[in-house]
Length: 324
Image 1 (cartoon, rainbow, N blue to C red):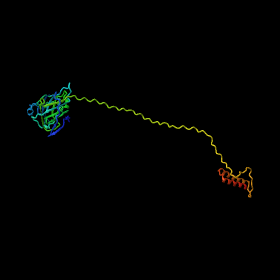
Image 2 (image 1 turned 60 degrees about the vertical axis):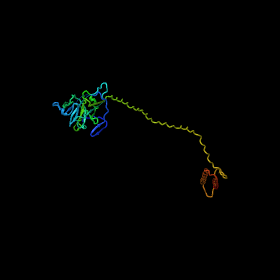
Image 3 (image 1 turned 180 degrees about the vertical axis):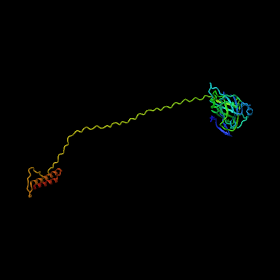
């Protein structure tokens, strides 16, 4: 499918099937000129007498028509302003006025395109179909927009400027759009060499490209200090106490000595006198008995029971000794 470059031209309103587009404010209208014009007709054959009288097209008219296929196409030689010493054309518009007195048919159904002519051609009205020049409609084409109130077709040729300025370019062709598939129509323009074509262009210098933005500053990375393990201080210990010097041995309490109770006389030392009792008893028996008594007396004395009870015990022992 051949690409079409569409121009943005304001708000479009559908009025009775006719596309009405707001006009673009006029640009500079000088230094763009038309060198020649012509049109080709499918029925025109260089091998036969001209059918120009039957076409209904006058000498100062440029027709474009469609009858299930392209039938008439118009050619306009365009000369752009020289780019040396001045800024090149950055925008180019073309307005073609419709001849209201010509044999127009279904103008509101027309679908027109503008393309760059790449082959050489000679003016003709009409030129033979087989003699029409080559074009670039299969490459880049811009659509024509009908301006009803102004009774003209508007073409934004800006996408074609670079191709028009090329050495192999030989103007423009205005032709039916073969992909629109519309009903038959015919649009007859006024002569482009007279007052039918109006070019507007803009040659102001293009704004310079903005300087490249500075790269964002690199974030400085401060190396974080390596973590150091916290060293806990060694625990301090209180100095050991000096060795304990041995002191004097504690005095031992004097052993308790049982004091004799009053009235109790100590037993005189000396050999024991054996008294014979009525019952016969051996000396060994008496010795054992006294030993037991003295042992009991020593135990009572050691316990400190030498009070009244101790005195009584001693009296008992004494009387026992006397008895014995």
